[in-house]
Length: 572
Image 1 (cartoon, rainbow, N blue to C red):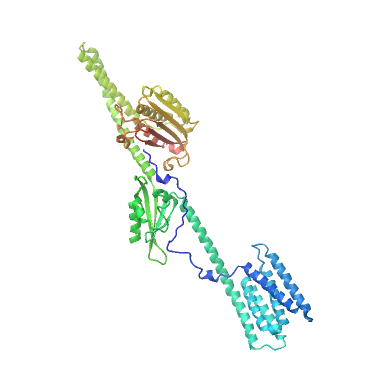
Image 2 (cartoon, rainbow, N blue to C red):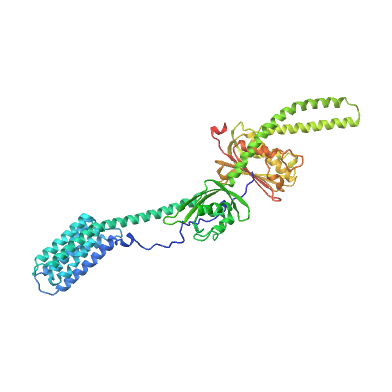
C-alpha cells in the first residue's frame, strides 16, 4: 500500500469564522429592545439623587425662617437623609440591590417627602403633585406587582389626605390628578413588570443564542469533516477549519461573504456540481464520492453529502455540504482487496505445489538414476546435469509457493520486537546479498503480542529485498517504537507499534509500484515476486497496516503498524 500525504493533514491555524450573512448588518434596537427599562441600580440612583435634591430645596427654602413647622421639616429631612445613606451603603457593591421590603420602605420615605413638600408649600401643590406620578412609576417598575400596587395606594392616600387638610377644598382637577396617579401607578405596576420580565427573557435568549453559536463554532471547528455553506447568490456563508485544510489554498482563497463557486469549481468539480444543483433545484446528495485537487495538481478522494434549506422569510436557498477526506479509507480498501486476492492465490499455490511436487520428485529420482547409467559421452552428462539443476530450481519455487500459502498467525506470544529484529539483522547480515550493506537498528524495548515466526519472515524479507536493491552498496536503517497518536492511517490499528525499514537505494520502479504486493510481480531479474506478497500477508495476519514511500533515486521506506495487544476474540 503506497502512502500519499493528504492536504487535510497539513498544518493550518483555526479560522473560527462563524456563519454570517454578508447581506445583513447589525440590526438596530427594535421591539422589546427599544422598550427595555433601565436596570434597578440606574433607577435607584435616580431616586437617590432626586430625593436629596428635594430635601435640599426644602431645607434651603425654610432655612432661617421662623416657622412652627421647622421641627417637622427637620424630622422629614433627617428621615430622608438616613434612608438615602442606607440606600447608598447597600448599593456600594456593583451587584447589590435592596430587596422588595426595603424598596417598599424607600417608597414610603419618598412619598412622605413629597407629601411634606406639598404640606409645607401649598401654593405649589399642583406642580409638586407630578412627583407622585414619577415616584409611583419608578417604584412600580422596581417592586413586584403586589407591593407596587401597595406603594401606589399609599401615595394616593397621602395625596388625598394632605389635600383634604389644605385651606382650599379639593376641586375636580384634584380628583383628576388622583385618578391619573392611581391609574398610571397601577398600569405601570402590571405592564412594567411584564415588560421587565419580557426584557429579561429577551436578554437570556440572546445570551443562550450567543452561547449556542459559540458551541456550534467549536463543534464545527473540531470535527474531522469539512463543512461549507453557500447561499443562493454563490457567496460563502461558512467554511470550517477542516474544510479549509481539505480544499487547500491560502487564507484569501475562501472569504466569508465573497463569491466562492468559481474557486470551488477549480478545487472540486463534483462538489461544485452538487452545490449548484442544490441552489438551482433544491436537490440533495445523500452519499457520493468526489475528487479534490491539491495545490500541486494531484487529486484525492472525498466522501460527500449535501443538504438544502430555505432561509426564513426568503426564497433564497442555502446549500451546506459535508465532505471527508477518504484517502486513508481508500488505501485500506485496496489493502483488503489485495489481501483477499493474495489469499486466493495462496490457496491455489498450495494446491498446485502439492500436485506438482510429487511427480517432480519422481522425475528427479529417475533422472539421477539415468545420469549414473549413461556413458562418458559429454553431451549426455550435460543434459543430465541440466535436468537436475532445473528440477532443483523448480523444487525451490515450489517451496516458496508453499511458504507463501502457509502465512498464518498461529502462535501468539509476548515478545520484544526490538530484540527480535536485532536477531534477524544479525542473521541477514551473513547472507551473500547483504555483503557490503550497512544495517543499523534504532529503538528501545517494545513489547507486543505476535507470532514470532511470521515477524521473523516479515523482517527478513524486507531486509533482503532492500539489500538486493542496494546491490552491495548502501545503508539500511530499522527503527522500532510506539506510534504517536494519529500517526497510523486513519486509526486503522489500535495502540500501534511502528516498525520502519528505510534504505537509500534506487527506489522502486514505476512499472512495479502499483502492483507491488501482487504475487509474481518483481523488478529484480530472477526473482519470484513472492517476498513482498509474504510480507503483506504476514502484516494482514496480525491485522496491521503496511505503507511504502518511495521515489526514484531517493530510496524506499516501509512503515508497518502492528497492534501491541490482541483481544481474545481477535486471535481466533
